[in-house]
Amino acid sequence: MNDPKSEVLEIFTRTKALLRGHFVLRSGLHSEYYFQCAQVCQHMDAVTRLAELLLKKLRTRPDIAFTCVLAPAMGGLVIGQEVARQAGVRYIFAEKENNVLVLRRGFKFSPGEKVLVVEDVVTRGGRVIECLDIVRKHGGTPVAVAMLVDRSGNGVKFDAPSFSLLELSFPTYPPDALPDSLRNIPIEKPGS
Image 1: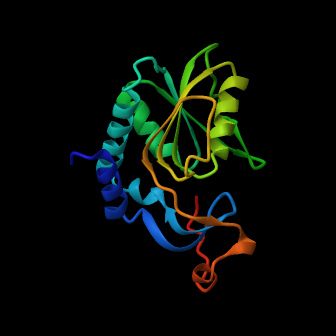
Image 2 (image 1 turned 90 degrees about the vertical axis):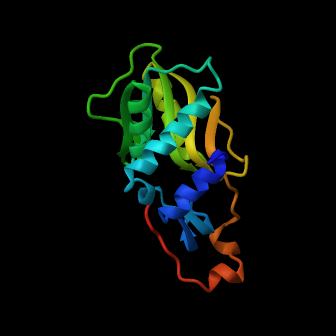
């Protein structure tokens, strides 16, 4: 395909990773649409292609170089590992401990190590911000954020350059302000 955004949307649609219904997002907001990236991750050809497209987008900025990829568990694990594999760099992940992302398993950064944070879908950016903080706290240097889908509607800004393959802004609603169209549909929580 010539248009990367169309190709990415086709991959999400083909793998049934773009769902429609009534969903509670990790942020606590409600939405009619949900990206279940775990569905894409069943298909390694799709993961390989998404990582290729993400790296191609990153390479438009030759000043961004990295020797490590950090991904938040769970969502960023598979795409983060594939981006690292294709880039030929080290890969580590952060995981929840007492509801906060932390480095475990002996993972460390070298002083000043240049780190790319990779995530699957960003709505409010909380896990990415936690990862950027982790990199700094442990002596690394975050150089960029790469994500498959930015669904923030340009509402999230990071203190590192950010890149996404797809920007889709679906309406989201707080639980006390649901439109009738959602209020009458049972809530699904497919897992983040």
